[in-house]
Image (tube, rainbow, N blue to C red; front, side, top):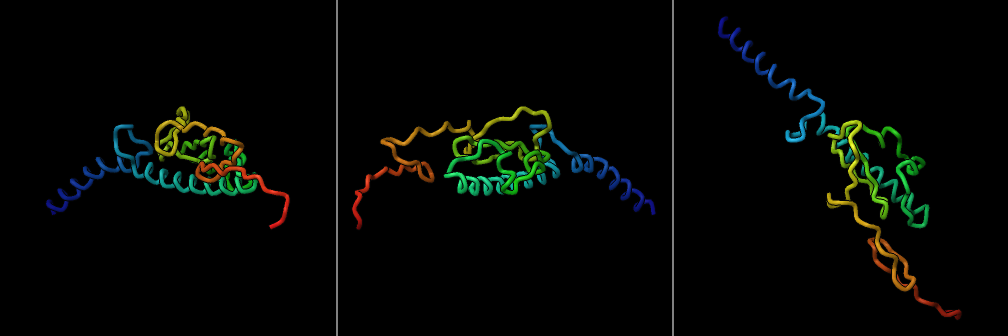
Length: 153
């Protein structure tokens, strides 16, 4: 009977040490993410993927022009709950319209946003205009304008 009581006391002590760490909402920057932060990070990744799909549809509808803000994506299924999701800090690359989550489940309200590009560094600058009046195609490829003759084939 005493052995059982000792085992229960040890389990209570271990639970007292581990439950606060597991149930914590936010961890310190130098610590590993809490389970809550990891879950929020997964949700942020899913929201970013959905927003990037909405960007592609927007660009299809607007002659390959990226949206100016996340609010322009609302008619393509993006909601305020997605844009302002807990733990997420979404940034949009103005040149391509690509949406990135810089919070990863750890963003806290009131934190200053950081604009990042796809490689994790500073956001890329807008590409220069195509030379000789060409057209900028997918992936930044320049498609030259080729004059056509007025005759048929």
